Length: 268
Image (cartoon, rainbow, N blue to C red; front, side, top):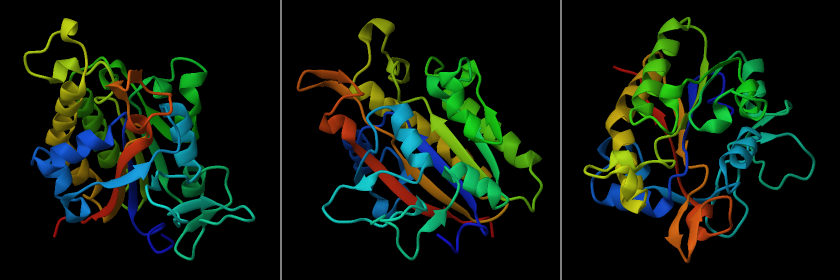
């Protein structure tokens, strides 16, 4: 990562609340053509979330603790704050002295931009201002929220505007929190009604909706130079699994998340 930071633009795309099993099923069924085209081997990597709900997980990720590979062993991290005794800091790790990765990248000359989604990014109170407050520039509006059936499209439009306004020589770290997977998501399933409620099928339909528009995001982020992208879920959610519903709880449907990172190449 020391060869990437300072050279490439960076994208952290969190698919808020996305379950690993649903992500894998849709990729295997050919329902994620735009995402799968960038996943190594066309498949998601299975990882464990650093937190069981949005606030905790993002605080950890912004400190360098991305989801951990779901296999025994010590797994070197891409980014890490400097501290003695770290067993997951390796030669290829971008090590920073700032309290968080966002500030560290700003110190390296990046424009740091947050496009929020769920309530922890809405800036409508003290708690909803903590995470976006890490960034030099942050955006949220009701059209980006969990209640909007067109939230991701609106978020991508804002990213396109941000990229277009940025001087060509300025590096960009863009963070986007996708709210579409989070409940309520019933409106992404054709024929569903509010009374139908949410479930794995509507959760899957929301992911397919995101895939239909993610190409615009990738095109914007690679329009100026190569972009290194991390795409993952911050946590999953339960839909009646073993009697559990929701997240902020210790169940495999919550802790197990899809993850991938890859380069987005600029146009030839």
